[in-house]
Amino acid sequence: MLEFINSPKDLKKLDIDSLPQVCQEIRDKIINIVEKNGGHLSANLGVVELIVALYYVFDFPKDKLIFDVGHQSYTHKILTERKELFDTLRKEGGLSGFPNIFESVYDSYTSGHAGSSVSAGLGYCEARDALGQDYYVICLVGDGALVNGVTLEALVNSEEKPEKFLVILNDNGMSISKNTSGLYKTISRLSRQKSYSKTMKKANNKIGKNWFGKQLKAFKSFIKRMLSPLASLELVGLRYVGVYDGNNVKQTVKILKDIKETQRINLLHLATTKGKGNLDAERNSEKYHGIGKHFISSINSFSQEFGKTLTEFAEQDKRFRVITAGMRDGTGLTDFSNEYPDRFIDVGIAEEHALTMSAGIALGGVKPYFVVYSTFLQRCYDQISIDICLQKLPVCICIDRAGLVGSDGQTHQGIFDLSYLNHIPNLTILSPKDPIEFRDMLNFSYTYNSPLAIRYNNGVSQNFLDHKPFDLSWEKVINNAKADFTILAVGHRMNKLALEIQEKSSKKINIINARVVKPLDTKLLGEINTPIITLEENVLNGGFGSAVQNYLLENNSNLSVKSFGVKQEFISHATVDSQLLQSGLYAENIIKVMELYEKK
Image (cartoon, rainbow, N blue to C red; front, side, top):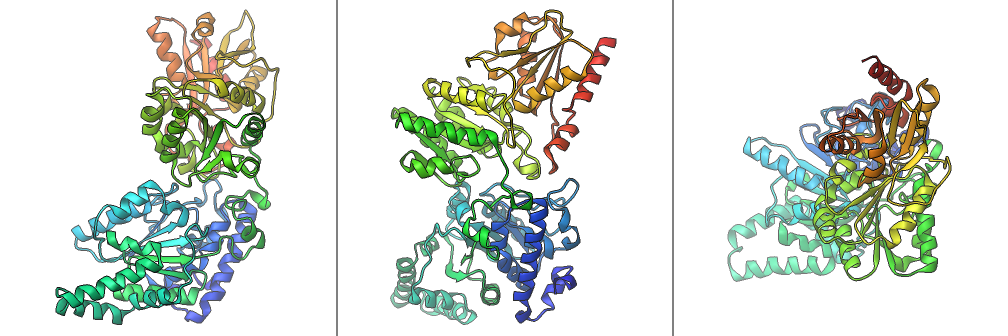
């Protein structure tokens, strides 16, 4: 049946009894393509019926559907004239794994991080009403993203919410308990019906201002608040109904039609099964949240080393805590959290809270380790600068997925952290060349009594070269007194690249592992007497190369510096190797630049 659906109009032509089959075919297609390409599986399988029901009832793209995070948008892409392109998902030049306003008119908002949908939706409503337009705005929010700080700010910002504005809470983690009360469900069902809407309007007009009318409405509100904690959101203008089975497509269509007709309800709570239709994904939804090709979990060497080292710490000392923001598995903390749950804190999608909490933990005399993906650390600039660095607190921030991340694309690249961390006072920044050096840095961090950030990339990272005891200095990897150039390399991939350049070039090259990004090793920098090449997996503006150039300029050095880094743009989804090539971070390009330099 799916072969005949090329647009939302085709879906609307079907009888409602055909929708379960459509859902099954979409689910099969998602499983097939993710098995080939990798991607976000469990979340997408859970919302198939919900997305199909939305497209059956509403009129997109006139109506606006805004995804929170957007990793659950695969069904949406299949139904919106991209079905034939779906096998290009997450491939270079193909469909993005997230909504993108430049990809389709059906994508109302480019998303990738949690917390944006409700604020963006309210903004759409403001513009719609200002221009006298008429359309529905629907925000799809997961139970994890609901407690994000930005979402909560948007929800409680005003006592009234605009008309034709609907927040759908996709509860697939049961972080909000399922309500089984028959009385509550009866009230919920009544509240979304057209007859109820008309009755309430009449009551407001005729008895709303007298004692009986006020008591009647207060009693109804009291019952709902007593039977569902979320119903108290009516106090901030959110008229709530739920909990319903979001994987029952026919029932969900009926509920959405009721809501569309009455225009009263603006918070719908649906329970869905994450990973539905794939037993492995249902049983282990965290593992299958983001999965590689052939459903094989990606190997992230630094993440594994982090979890392993912190577990060893825990065997010797209880005076530390590990904090993450909804990224337990991805940051290598599964075993640690199982073995030492009393020392592990997962705050959910609330990175700012995690860092300020870390500041409090440090002030209380316990060592905090906050581990976070680079792209999500971007939320936390104020907490890093004021809560931690201003107070000179010994918080260790472990920045996972720093650098290029591949198929997750524009919203997830970790290419900005050096630029916004470099200028913050009191902060030391490290970047290990391999997992063994990372272990040494973690050991160093345990007694380091100042703010510290350690950044490292994803993927397989093998140990290489000899290892010297770690201290706050750079490491001479290749040292030749008669060198033509000196390469300063930051991190694993750039150190590997430096060795490749040295091997392929006819020039004599010194290589320095610039493992301490901040402060610069000015002693070793002062000993260099050749032109300098800097390599970093970060945008150039404000990064490591900029810091080296500024230092030499301030100290009247005549040394020439050529810096290589990631393109100053949002990098689209592709393989990491392809993204490195796009930015000129490959041996042949850098050797060519060196040869041109000598000709000058």
